Image 1 (cartoon, rainbow, N blue to C red):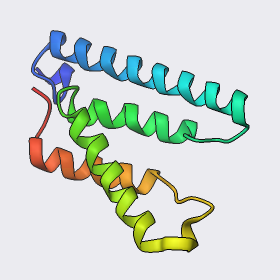
Image 2 (tube, helix red, strand yellow; image 1 turned 180 degrees about the vertical axis):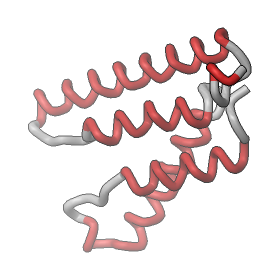
Image 3 (cartoon, rainbow, N blue to C red; image 1 turned 90 degrees about the vertical axis):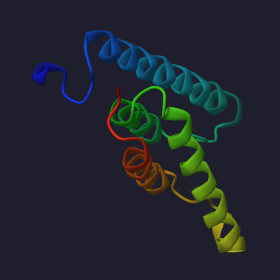
Length: 110
């Protein structure tokens, strides 16, 4: 119905939200552990929240494709940048692009 937006029903919505919360919580914890041990911000909280929002857009079943596309895009960009990317490159643009492409490829969550 209209209340559930893109999702087919309350069960699918609940599953997608639960997966998004679990992944955001896990990535936040991993980022915090890395920060406390190395003082390096390996994965920013903005990236983690964008991953969670992306899961809500593409659905829990297509989350792996979204992360794969973003990772491959980031790796290719880092390889093309070479030494210019020593300080790192932002991951959010690759996540945003991957969310868009995944949504176009898979359609709304069902």
